[in-house]
Length: 196
Ligand code: 5GP
Ligand code: MG
Ligand code: MG
Image 1 (cartoon, rainbow, N blue to C red):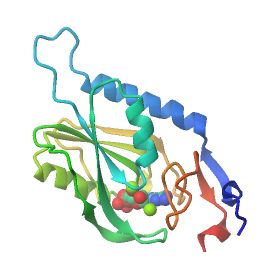
Image 2 (cartoon, helix red, strand yellow; image 1 turned 30 degrees about the horizontal axis):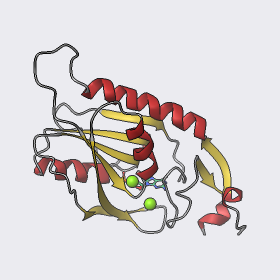
Image 3 (cartoon, protein in one colour; image 1 turned 30 degrees about the vertical axis):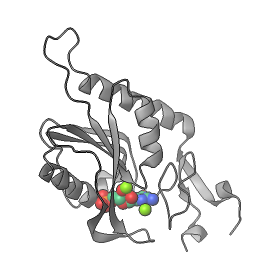
Image 4 (spheres, helix red, strand yellow; image 1 turned 120 degrees about the vertical axis):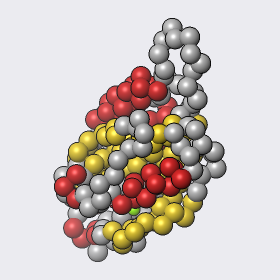
């Protein structure tokens, strides 16, 4: 296997420019939806909490929050279901919990990619049990053809998605194969020999 990172990639699906344009669109939508009504006499809503799902969402979360024009909190959870392979290992387990108290707050779960839907449905239930008043989902990629578990945002929550992803195992922009390739600034598909 060649040592240079970019030589491992067979095909780029979304490049840096496409990603940054779409991320700022998502951030504008979130800013508009959570900003409260202008000129309203009612008190402003409590700042939303953006919860990144570690590790895959770290770049998406970082880019998203820098484009959101509202006071917000940021936190992380970790849910492990994948081993080092490309097939989900079943029911996810929460292995890192929140630091921020989300009771009575609007939460936006920030995910790299939704595949079977198991991770998100488990995390939404967890945030509901912690008393979040709504849970939205903001996923950079969605693979709807692979869905096994139907999840629903909680309360007034919405489902924001960056792009629909064809049924490939993708890497980059935070997403890994065997903990590698997260630092690619684009999303791509590996050369077959790299999955071995
Ligand atoms: P789900 O619980 O929806 O099946 O899986 C969600 C998690 O599986 C994602 O957050 C991501 O970490 C991982 N995953 C699903 N599809 C892909 C993929 O194509 N590439 C990578 N790198 N990870 C994936
Ligand atoms: Mg993830
Ligand atoms: Mg992974």
